[in-house]
Image: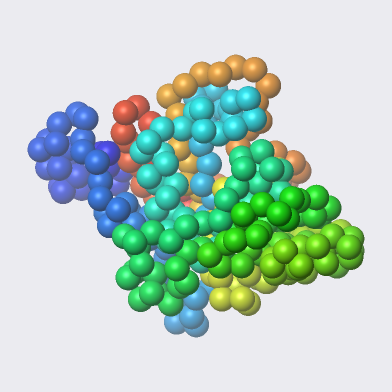
Length: 264
């Protein structure tokens, strides 16, 4: 892993010492590179970051899954981002396609999470209008911390009851069948989850962008080409005007670029 941006004297010296291949960063170094903003004078406000991977030709998936366009370094960053978060927000379709499991406790982050007032692992918060989910899966039946289901006031009462019976905590964050993105972020913050991470999928990320609640995007650029009809990292409704984000940092390993953009 090498830091390409921001460039400092330390960056230049480190690159020279490590050579073009760089070295594998420790978990502590990655955690420092991806630290959430410090709380302001009025306390912690919710901060929502997205984490996605895209090929050079814009594909967010290959044959419906992101794993084929990822790499070991990307998975290390993925694990660190989860370990830093209070809650991981994910769409129901991604839960079904990717075979989501509960977040696990990681010994390397236990002390830091305890010092930050966090539980042993982030909660998984599933956004779903239909609640068409298999509540017998470990994500719901045996998580380390209860899984959250974000939905609307108009959700099917029977499915709500099934989710609660399985041990999930249902959070109403909208007046219709589904959750409103802005209300979902604030509902999670009211539960104490201010350090938020979304892993998509593309439809959910698009909804969060359209609602103007995404604060940061951690985008891995995979040095691969796939063509085909794969989704982009964000879909759904478009914004009236493109929103400008600024590059915060860029790392590189094995041709993969690990970029971090923040809203201006």
